[in-house]
Image (cartoon, rainbow, N blue to C red):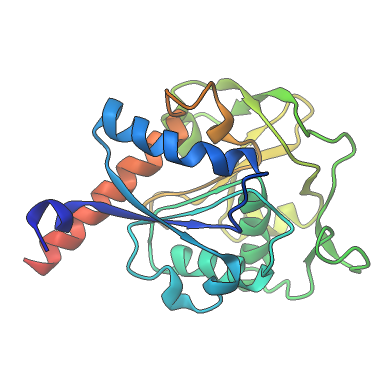
Length: 246
C-alpha cells in the first residue's frame, strides 16, 4: 500500500443504497467536493444494512455514517454499526433515520430500555421511542437552536441554523433517561422538540446525530459544516491509526 493510500481515511456508508433516496444520490458529489474544496479525501464504501449485522462490518473504518432511507432492510444491522462506532470511538454521524436509530441503540444498550422500539419498524410496539411526528417534516425547512458549547454549535459555527428535512418520525419518550445516561440533546426546533443529539467529547471523539439532513444542503457543491466536520474527524482518526502502526 502506498503512503497516500495508507493515510486516506475510510468511511462506512451504512444504508440500503437506492437511486430513489435523494441523500444517497448526493454522496458522490459531496465526496468530490470535500476532496476538491477542503482537501478531505475519504475512501467511501457502501455497507448494506443486512451486511452490517456483525461488529466487524464497520470495525477498522475511520468514520461511520448511517444514512437516511428507513425503514432499513435490517434494523439489527444499523444498530450494530452504531454500537460499534460508539463503543470503539469511531467518528460517527447519523442523519434522519440514522439519528432515530442512534437514539434507539443508546436507549437499549446504555439505558437498559430493552423493549423500546421504532414505530416505523414495529407499529404495534408497546413502548415506542420513535413515533410519527405530529407534523411531518417531509420536504420541509425549519429552524434549529443549538446549545452553547455543544459539538453541534462548534461544528456549525452558530447557535441558530435553518435545515432541510425529509422525515416523518422522531423521538417521543424516555428522553430524560437518555440524558441522565450521558446523551446530550444539543439542538431543538422552535417548539423545543429534539433535533440533534451528541456524546460529550470526553466520552467519544465525534458522535453526532441530526434529524435534519445536512447532505441536502444547497446543491452538494459546498458540503455542509456537519459533513466537513465528519470528514475532518475521519482524517484525524486515520492519522492516529497510522501513527500507532509506525
